[in-house]
Length: 236
Ligand code: C5P
Image (cartoon, rainbow, N blue to C red; front, side, top):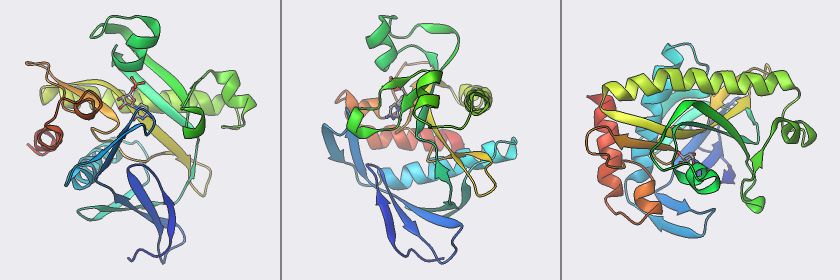
């Protein structure tokens, strides 16, 4: 399989067409951005780590019955995956309050939530990814029906129910994460994008150490070592 035409360049990935119209290749970049692109940097090797972590997690989820766009890891920085129509909703799943939830609602950082919270953000950089309620999603035509919103919520909870205990066994708290979904050529909603420390928060259960992109957002340093730790715990 070969990369052909550049379809789209995002903040963390480039998307290429291939010789198969149903498949695309994502190139995982080393670039880092935060605060809607206001803070930028790059860390050599970060893209490869996210590709490897996402590959392992997509394989795990597929094995547990969650359909994803994953086909195969091509090399260190490239993943082959299905071509889908991406739903422009970022599905945020939270087990512990931190980040924008603590900032916006004043919930003390580190509070374990009484139940898993699922939120929708509009995947729209120009508008700064604002929060959406169900009616916003329907008015904007981001999905076709209320049933599809319920399906996104159910799938997000299913992913959390698999990944939270999986990481707990490896000594990591899955604090929160962002998922994206798309519709494949049959109209089936499947999990897309990536699952990596760029879009999940992992806290070490013993030390509380942050092993995710907050190291960059908060200027803590040691990002690559943290991402390596996440990969090693997955592989170990
Ligand atoms: O910033 P906030 O607290 O809303 O982030 C919640 C979770 O969603 C975090 O794990 C963060 O990495 C992820 N996220 C993301 N992309 C965004 C917004 C949030 O990956 N645009």
